[in-house]
Image 1 (cartoon, rainbow, N blue to C red):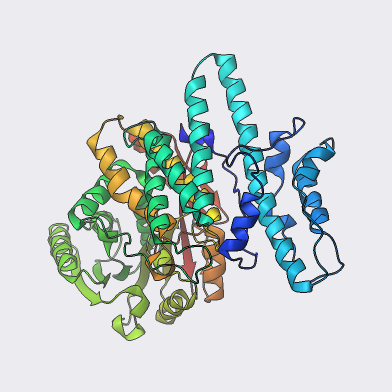
Image 2 (image 1 turned 180 degrees about the vertical axis):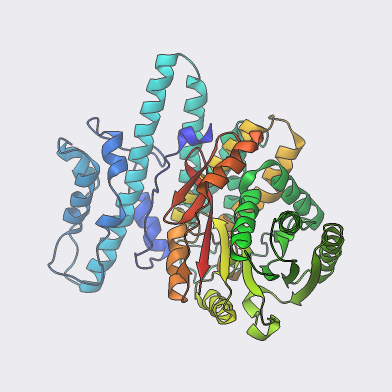
Length: 527
């Protein structure tokens, strides 16, 4: 399993760090590997529990304030001493020490930050070595899978080393590593080989786009998540809907919450941002229509759905299908389309009528509006807030793929998609064509967008649920705890094909995970 080779803990936590140039990061990263670019240095007395329990963010200092003049060797030594046990030898500390910095304030601040990046890189490889030792020990006891573990760990090291070389714009070294990775990351191999093949594609694309070291800026990518032919991506998305719980979980939780908000009312208006996520049929709203028709002792219902997006023709086809479904179920139905992307949506585009319960529904959509400036998302949230919906439902991937540093995003994405590919490995056979289509035509496109794209072309900007809480709270929304954990677990239990998935409650949100690794989070908000 791919997750055997990766820790569930974040490797980098650099959200609060200042920006650093690619050249600076190159110098700090390569300084850790004088002999071998992907073999870690590890003290024999270190323990995995000591490493895993220490949060990196607590040790990130404020680089804008200087209380006293210290050497970079002292700074690095103090950080590394937290990584290793107190019994670590002085040789390990001295091996990563640097020359004393100059008295210049700017120079000292710059070197101090580079030492932190260098320390985090060393920490990852130390933790990786510990995991390898633990896994190998377990396999030696059981007497099985030793070769698979060694190959998997070697593939992890190659991926990380290649990502570092790409980040440093070292074309020669990165090309050598990519050649080796292509020979080992097989599309129809183990679950980790399959996910690694997707990251290899992303690294190759990024390497082809970066400018030589010393140049200013980053070459604008010509690809994005929609580069795959529309019919293949739509087929892959439909297969994901049928075979994975990610989207179905969001639909179930959203519909259950909508029904609770609509209780005792007669007119319901749903504004669907993105409209069905690009699925060819309105699965979520067809299910809602059936549940509305099954209500006992409730007044007659009139349902209005407004789809927001640019695929107007497809939306109208879906609207006609929903109209037929509503007619058969005895539900009065009205459908309209707002032809606009989310960034350009205006308050007057949504026709709100008196006496109706307004609900705004967003399934895996808001992360596409997140940009470096944050202005587009803030504007959209303000518009939604002006509409005063009774509830705003947000379902998003629960992972940090929007950090400021490429290596941090790369490692977080590797953890996240390894869990997804592990789940596919359990649910579908190795040579199943449906599995290959989902992996290569959908998840691979997300991975490539995260790894190879920058600026406006990078649209897969997934964030953790805690970050969404902060964003929505700043926009004036109040969290409405979702008390559906029992119903959600019952729903998950009925789907026998989803064994291995879990649902937990996290501060009022519901989080779907694969063996406790968060995959998708659902939250509810009120004005």
